[in-house]
Amino acid sequence: MPGATLPNMSIVLPALGGDSGDWDTYLNEALGVIDEHDHTSGAGLAITTAALDIDDDLSIGGHGLTGVGQVAFTAVAALASGSKVLFVDSSTNELYWRTNAGTNVKLTSGTSINTSLVGGIVGDYTSVGAEVAYDDANDRYTFKQEGSPKPWARIASGDVRIYEYNTTETVYVGLKAPAALGASYDITLPTAAPGSTAIVQMDSSGNLTVSNTVANAATFSTSITTPTIGGTPNFTGAVTMASTLGVTGLITATAGLTAAADQHVTVSGTGEYKHGSRSLFQTPESSVVPTGTYSGGASSDLVSWTLSTGGGTVYIPLRGLIDGDRLLSVVIEGAATQEPTFTIYSNQGGSDVERTHTASLTIVSNSSTTLTLDTPLEVNKLGVLGMNVFVKVVTGASTFAIRQVVVTIDHP
Image 1: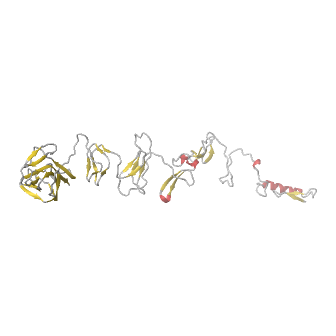
Image 2: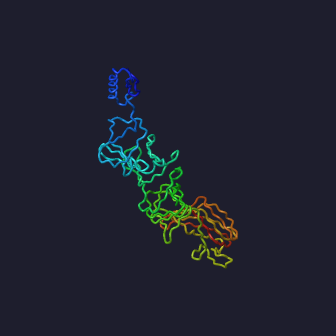
Image 3: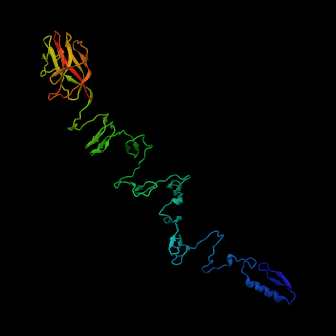
């Protein structure tokens, strides 16, 4: 008679004390089940890890391991044979991958990945959360340091070669440090671009500024002819040049120009020294005597040209005029008891030409009168002897003494 059925393999046991004629049947069936069992569900108990004693390499038959929570390695000597194997080297405790060609590739380096495998980018950026990335939307590489959000990081390198964006050109603009650099320094760019073309200047801290005002003295050690200055340079301080400065525009020196000792200011060709209103002083001297007499006199009488006989004419030459000067006015300082008349003449080719002017003709003792030309008289070269300019004074019956003549001129 059949007895109980076992739960794991469904083996039917014969009933104890049952019909002795059936035991062999049940026993044979049970032995058949045992012979075919494979420990799958219903075919025997599942094998536990305690029942395993693996003493050689275990093949999975090309199948994958699934549901693996973790893989723990026992370090082994670096493999010298085999392929497509992942292992931990016992001499370095680093993780390696042995390639299909039989090369051991080091995957880890200490507490980080082996960064020598990723395009030569090495360092501790992975351990501190820094980032080197490519930004496809803006076609750029970015370098950022740790933080949240990650701020921009510094870049240290040798020469920087800049090519035109989005081209395959081979020409570039290079930025490089000088070979004889003695100490490090930073260059800080201006806070904004200038409103128009300006000079870039750097202070002792490396700050760049843009301005057309140069505060310190500028020394030019070689000839400056190219590029020439096409605008109007303004110098508010000293400018020292060791050679030639070529300028195509007007130079305005608001603090003056000073030549070094024994040096000259040379104007070539037909260039001239131009200036605004200036005064030339014509003082009486014995070597230049108008029609009349020269009187040294006592200190109280002052030095003068004197017409000692009344009713005469005095011709006073105006000295110191050069080609290109313009006569603007004449001031005559003198003393007379009778009013004289004054006329300005210029001599052109032997002919005296009267120049119209506005004059106050009242002369008082040791005072003056001013003759202002209605139209400035430009002094031009007329012939070899040039142009003579003089003042004609016609006196009255009394003595007339001329103390000084002041000529106002310009040279535009």
